[in-house]
Length: 177
Image (cartoon, rainbow, N blue to C red; front, top):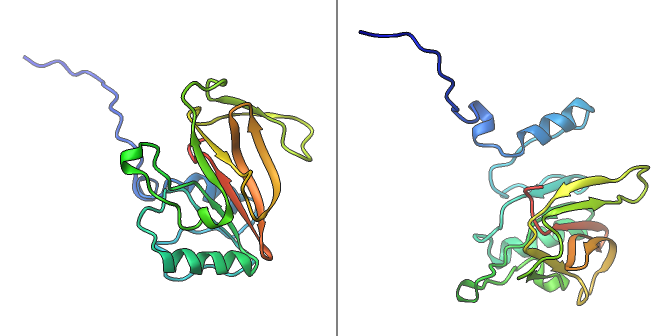
């Protein structure tokens, strides 16, 4: 009445990988001897010579937390973030960290690119192809901070790196590349 059948079933990530979307990046850095670890919240910020990556939209971040994060970057930290602005006018939100820096988000209705972009990274001997959200770009034209690097196409920037005090802020239009 029964027949034994082998069937593969996708179960998703297991263990720590289920809760840490940057675990692969963490392990990659550790393989080069770079100390890397994940933080639960921002109650304690890393040392000023560290890089902090916040891949989420930071909707829950209040003004005090944004100021504390800004002071950390100004003291020498390197912060990598994505914008927290929503694109539907009904749900438009301000970004308490990026707005004072003059970084704006713009929605692209009819993008020139399909989402695949050839990146000619400065100092590299070759280029890489990166998948990005084709409908979101950054605008640093109103930036009061000094732009150190801007990777862009006809529709706008998808990566902006700028000086913030003694530190550096890197803003990605999308963290799913």
